[in-house]
Amino acid sequence: MYLVVAANTWLLAWTHFGHAPAWLTLGVPALLTGVCLARCVQWWRGRREEPDATAAHRALVRAGRMAWPVALAFSLWPLLLFPYGDAFLRSHVAFCMATTAAVSQLYLMHVRPAMLTIALVFNGGFILFFAATGEPTFVAMAVSVALMTFVLVTTLLRQYRRFTDLVGSRLRAERLGAENLRLANLDSLTRLPNRRAFFGALVQACERADARGTRLAVGIIDLDGFKPINDLYGHAAGDRLLKQVGQRLSLMASGRIHLARLGGDEFAMIAEDLGGDEAYVAFARSLCEQLRAPFQLEDLSLQVTATIGLVLYPDLACHAEDLYERADYALYHGKRLRRGGVSLFSADHQRRIQHEAAIEQALRSADLEAQLSVVFQPIMCMASGQALAFEALARWHHPQLGQVSPADFIPVAERAGLVHRLTRVLLRKALAEAARWPEPVGLSFNLSIHDLGSSEELERVLETIRHSGVHPARIDLEITETAVFSDMVQLQRAAGQLRGLGCGVSLDDFGTGFSSLSQLLALPLTKIKIDRRFVAGIQDKPTSIKIVRSLLALSRDMELGCVIEGVEAHEELAVLRELGGNLMQGYLFARPMSAEAVARWLARSVPETCQG
Image (cartoon, rainbow, N blue to C red; front, side, top):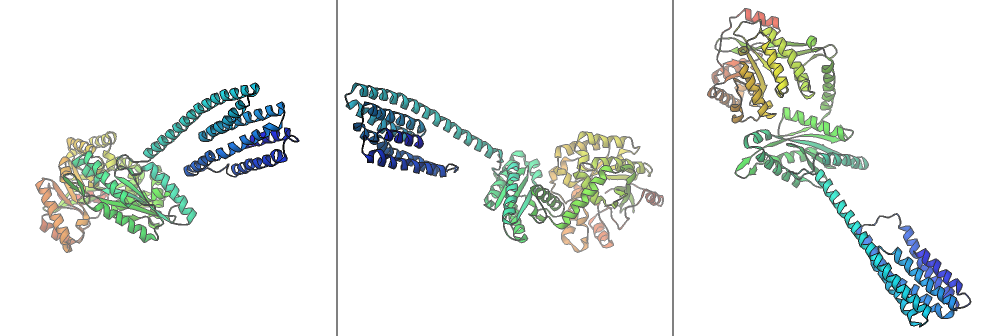
């Protein structure tokens, strides 16, 4: 716009050289051109800048204010030249003013105050001046410019409304898009960032840490005991509890602490630049403490704990995916070893990951029929001094890895979804041995929750039992107490089908999970097995004595058999017999033995029935 105006100025000045004073043909045009060039330079320097709303508003206000003096200057100067020329030069003045005004209005159509100022000052001055000359030609020009101004201003105002509508629509679309993006990254229940937002924030946090040379920690938070609350009080109560958990976590969020809900009762934390390892662990522990306080849900007071798997970046993780996976691994081990605390991913965990990866690969390609075997440990009846049953225990000898502990390969098989393949082979081999035993001797066999989690896998277990030749009444199938958390409805259905076939159903590791009595009553159990951690050194632990006494009384009241595991010392045995324990299992009686050793064991004794 300024270039066109400057060009018109010098063309008009050129036609008036020799007719008007030099200050009008050279001085004033030079001054006006200087203003135009200054504005051009200012525009050129800022052409690549993206102003914020404040800067943009300031520039628009400035443009509106500048329109007044600029319009006055560029309209008065041609009128001052008007008396010095002949009819042609005067017509050139009129033409120059009309074209300059029209071009300026078109360029300023989106800056409405400036455009209207040009129309009022430039065109208004033109119309009044030339109408006042009384010359018919100039009066006609004034009328034409008036009509042109009316049409042009009306059209430009309409275009301006369309422009503002377009801008408004774009702003509304941007706000809607931003809101949709916010909602897409927000958990609707807890109002915390969701899984998608967490991973986006994690990538950005890693980039910041790399750029600044700082550290960060990622924590995966899992609520202990949430599923029993859901099962006992319903999903509505569970949702209210999760909402309160989200509120507590929100209070701990800050510029350096990001918290999110990943799904279910699993949450996540990103802590940036807190200092040394101790600072990150201390913060994670404080988070556990916050969640340990009771939650008030109307007339209910509920309590859960939180286990956190924590990993530090860049110490033992190279990128965001590693961070999440290793924090999840630390959480997995924390849930197994010490619930309600913080499990920090370590170099030992790193070695275990590599070891477990090797185990998983070996499992996938293993000849399970040839490599898997079963050993048996007796479950002793103290009243008769004889073996009531034998528990089948898995053994795996791999050509390269050697003898692999079931404590290593069973969890790996469960996590990799391979455990049902192991179960089929092991159960078939265990039943084949049990078929050779005397009729009263039973077989106890551990089932994974994955073996009961679907109708197809359960049916395979039932078919294996039906075709084994072993009477179902001699078979006791064990499930761990922690399996109760997975899917209570499916577990009830599976346990019911096993009982319907005639098998016994035992709850293993009893007392180590968070089962409620209502859950125990909901399952058609025949036995419970007291975990060995309550037995070790019981003679010196009054608390363990109270727990075992209570569990024995509970089993009697519920008319369930009760097997005490892990008996390894005569002092333990003496205390357990005094408490009323009858069915026991442990190294004190026998270590796991081969099928041939079981046959020799049974040949030396006459099996009898025994009550737990």
